[in-house]
Length: 74
Image 1 (cartoon, rainbow, N blue to C red):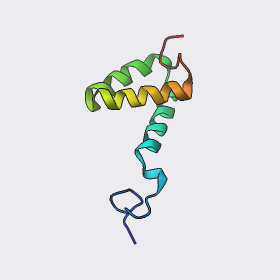
Image 2 (spheres, one colour):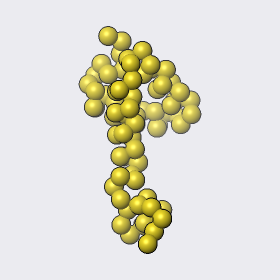
Image 3 (cartoon, helix red, strand yellow):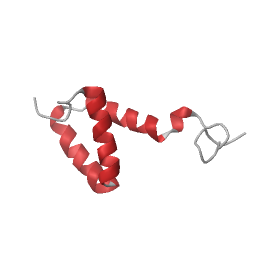
């Protein structure tokens, strides 16, 4: 029996909940639950900590889930 369902621990049958895609979708839902005024500063921190590619992936998912104005002021 493996320690968890991640790809590293269970290469033959990883649990989909351990995927990068699932993590990104969950984080996007977290961002969408934030007050609008907190979303852009959060995304700037993601850019600084994880880099442009990862930040863009998250922004794309936030916009997919929340619509085109999900990161803009309202």
